[in-house]
Image 1 (cartoon, rainbow, N blue to C red):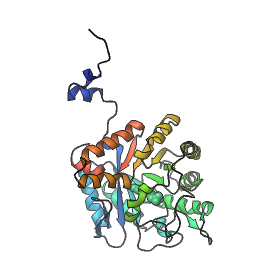
Image 2: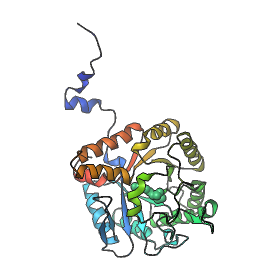
Image 3: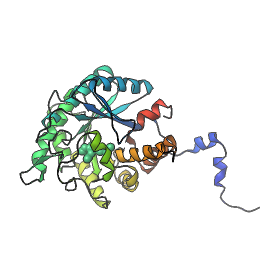
Image 4: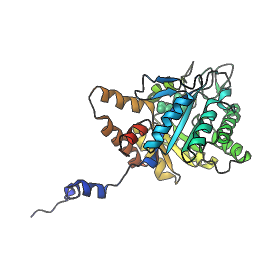
Length: 325
Ligand code: PBG
């Protein structure tokens, strides 16, 4: 009899395969993004480049979140679309800004739901950049920090459970931590978009959030896709500044970065399966070329296997409602 490794022994039945599975996906791992529109509570518009996702007014959002909570949703992240944009993005930190109002309503109705607030200015600035812009068109780092800190405090005051800065200004985690602590929010964690690339995979999101830059691009603040080691420096900086969770974004094209961040740091790691990743799967599935659910589940599992503890994904609600989580 020949002797060789019989890997098939542990694959012979579903029960056995389930028993030896190394990586599992659960509802507690996933965070569903929502786009909330200020203009009209009953606003509801499908996002053309993200089939199945909508821009929602406040009452529509409450109805959608209600259904999702019923299906088992544990956590969501909010992006706001204000009526008025200005150069300083003032609706991001206004007490009555749309995200602050949405957080208050959601937490009022579902106190146990974990509400993450994306902390950035790009949806609120008239120029679409994530920070203040100088007269010559440069995105200014240090003057932006105070506005991000104000935004984080406004979100925490509204009841946000986690503050998630996505702007990629240097020093923003320290600025936000200091402001949160100063306002008494010592226990509000920061999930920093620590390793965020200047990615073409964000294309559909910018339609959804109406946040595309009016001039230039985000390459002076978001990272070059060719750089892995630099991502570790970004992560180390955010750890030193007080981040509680480190995010890598996008997800699937950056599995190597997720793995390295997981191995190098002991904080929880989050991965963002971004809009372009979602839209690719949707488009291929709508053409009948791939099985949407199977590919979505496999992609999410891959993110976890690479080392992500948490995943932000537009598939969350669909998978919950279909009983896959
Ligand atoms: C805001 C922000 C972006 C995303 C999350 N927060 C867009 C960007 O940086 O241009 C992208 C999310 C996605 O593509 O799903 N700064």
